[in-house]
Image 1: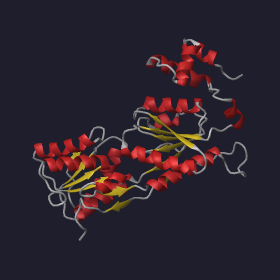
Image 2 (image 1 turned 45 degrees about the vertical axis):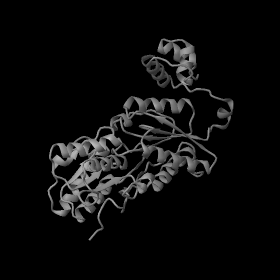
Image 3 (image 1 turned 90 degrees about the vertical axis):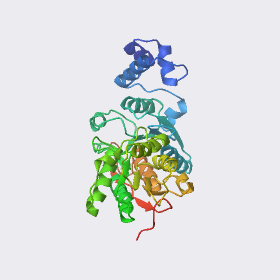
Image 4 (image 1 turned 180 degrees about the horizontal axis):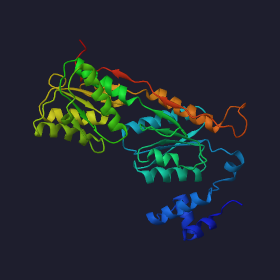
Length: 342
């Protein structure tokens, strides 16, 4: 017999009204209470009955994108691309913010099942591969992210190492010899580490030393973090004549920091970003950047999700779909923050 809201309330030690408030978001509920309710929902397998139409049709025509943050331009552009593609087939996109935390990502998955979304595109930042391996969900899920994840789920990734290698190699080929990696990390996992690997690989291929003193972590990868990275280099007297910024947002902050320090771009310092955001073309000078294949990745993500939502007619009920791991193409977009290649 399916679990009821009363069953959830008993398991969580709260009232039915509190459960309803958590699931519908009508009223603010304390964080500890909210988590107890969602844990009980997962344990009991409770599903929220939103409308009879949804139950009869078995579809909501709604996909959810779980993103680390709303205020990062990259995720705004990703959401816009996905939304336009879904509109062509009469579907809709909902965006949930995870805060780049494990708890936020798990909670978003729970809410996705409760609201009967047809599928989830989950940008994994906080969860580890072990967390993903232990996931229990009946909702179709496609992972977006940099980490190597268990092959239980489809995953779409950027070619971070190759993109970073291209960016750094271009700086070295156009005369830079001391290239700062703004946003980098010499240990750990995720985007910051793998892009640092690409930065290091370009130096190895050029037969030049990669100085770890030029690897600068950058907080939340905001504009101010890029500017502060330049201030730090100047303040500490660290020699540099090139910057590979790990996002275009960081690169924009870097340009502000260089202008503040009286350094000319690209004459004194060359700069390359990563993301090819729409705004990057309109900076002065225009930003040389890595295009990670946004359109291709959006297409792949929805293709993989759609085959989970609507398996091929010949597959048969209960037939498992072999997970895929897709990596988008990368290319370098040359603009005014770097000198022409020799």
